[in-house]
Image 1 (cartoon, rainbow over the protein chains, first blue to last red):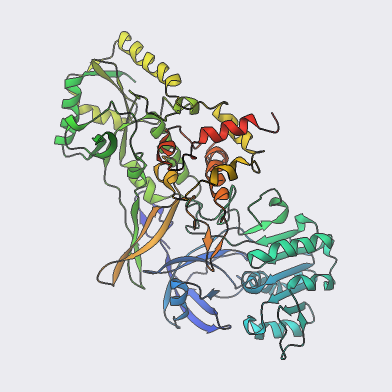
Image 2 (image 1 turned 135 degrees about the vertical axis):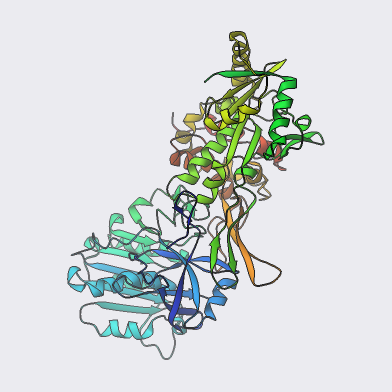
Length: 279
Length: 346
């Protein structure tokens, strides 16, 4: 995978190339792409991890993996926020990006077996959560009740709409959606994602709860979960920071003593309650 | 291993012989009334009587800008190395200890070949401090002398230098030393006296606890008012980071060549005091308060980095941040002593 140098140690900063096989816009700002590594190998990730995506000349950014390792290739969703991501949005099938990783900690895929699972996703937080959700759906018999809460700012920003519609139809899972601002074409729940928490049918104190969303969301979701008596040790959060190197050196992603690129991005909430910079 | 003795003239010849052999030597030279590490051209420029250099020798171990990869824009990349063999001459013990720490940080966990390959090609020639700088507090940090981590340690004993070659690399270099005598018991006594004096004498700011107590001290200091009080004056200029021998945070940037077809991915120094150090896409800054950044630096020195490298404190008492800070708030000793005075538990 990597050119070896000197003493045979691999270069941790050298990306491998991956080719885009499919792509589409999910809404006005989110670009979806399906990729395959040029080496022919699978990425080998576990849900919750991220990769460093680069275009030589424009830089590199950490992006969550959105697909389950049960499928061929891997999927990323990139929001257009800067020069690199803007260039990624212009890529088409057959074009290539550099990939390093997978990096970081993982969702508790084994520990979660037999348990009821509640996924709480805010906005683009659905993207990394989808990796685990799809993994669970591909191994459905291994897990208990599956509840997915999705909150989106406005109707037009909803992600993976066809997939959400399919999840809505499934009898073996519960999907609850909400949007922050009401719209004529929307007859579902209106309000932030915390308004859905009282509607969860799973036994929250016994379920595993997986939370991912924008920074502002965590405090309110964790407060609501605490009120619903979900214990901190059963809650997992997937945090965003500036994971520049991905290998625990550059210092940008630190939350106090923790390196999000290695100790995270998935953390057990009970491990963070004494980490003031976390939320 | 045996300690050699060279009189001052012989020592000059030793350095010139190394230079004549075409070896790259970076040594301490004068720059106006201060000192810097720079490429050495002649032994007569070498100033082992220096007090402190403006920047630490970190700039040769972890250069300010270092190429990691070369690439074709939008295409493939390949590894490049900046690992020219080099002799770093005249490193004070506190800076040596900082380099030794960095070696550990870049080799633990994910092994950084760029750093380590360069580091293996560097010969570390340390020297005992001959003159205390105005803000040094290495004695407080127990970094005023070093008994390991160097290839050669030089001590000025007045009329001669003692050279302690501790490694194969160091001994290989000693091949250039003509006329070296074995140090006598009397010489070693002089060296010992200099080192013993430095253990207490490099102490312009006195830390009121053992450095090994700092991680414990920091456990209860997180919400202390000192962070806000000091940081109120902070310009977020990052000078403290830039001059620090133990700071190693970096950014990675792509630099496109004038042909617009090729370029280099470089790693360059960054600083956790700079305003956007923890800013992510969408302009969310996870450490936007100056006080939080100020606190982060001193927590890294006293607690976070030590936790990664077996308890060694990541402040070596060189005092450069004290000198560099425009607002005069960077002195770690002032902050740690204040926390000592007002600590909530023993």
